[in-house]
Image (cartoon, rainbow, N blue to C red; front, side, top):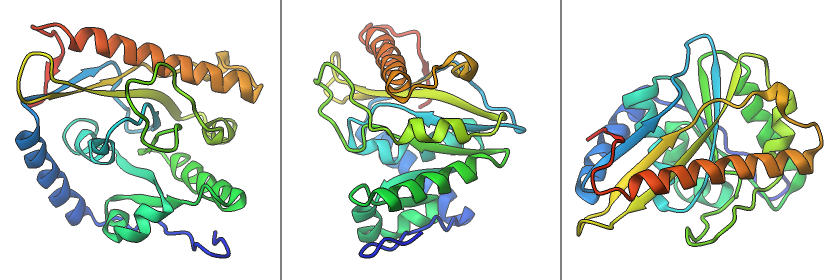
Length: 228
C-alpha cells in the first residue's frame, strides 16, 4: 500500500471520536449556516453498502458526510482524502478517512482498491469526490478523474452507487444555507463498460442532480426538508 515517498495512511475509526466530531460539526454548521437542508431520494438498507459520489466545491464537503451518516444514514462511513491533507490533519483517520496520493498512479490504485474492499462488506459507505480537488462552483461543466470508473466493475452486487450533490445558497438571507441532495441509485446494469463513456455518464448524472438542487434551493419557500 505504500508509495516510495508517501506511505499510505489507512482509516483508523474511533466511534467515540466520530460521534463527538459529528456533534461538533453540527454545532459549527448551526453557527455558520442559517439552515441545513436535505433532499433525500435514497435510504440505505443495512444489508447493502453505498458509494456516494458528487461535486466538490467547498471546504464543508469534508464534514457533510459525517453529518449525513450520523444523523440520517447510519452506516459505517469512510472517505478518501488527499495525502497532504491526511498527513497534516492526522485526526481525520479517526473519522474514517484514508489517503490517496494522486501523484503516484500505483499508490492511487491501491487506495481505490482499499475503498472497494471496504464497500464490498455490507453496511459500509464510501464518499468520493471524483473531481479530485475543490473546484470553483461557477464552473459550467464537471470534469471527473478516472478513479471511480476503475472501482465500479469491482463492486459487489450489494453496493449501491448514489449521486450526492451539495450547494450553498445566500440569495435571501445574510447567512447562507447549506443544501444537499441524495439522488437515486444508478442501475449498474445499464451502464456502459467503456471507461470514457461511463465517466461521461457519471459526470452528466451529477450535473443533472446539481441542476435540480440549484433550482429547488433558489425558491424562497423551498420544499426541501430542513434538517436544522
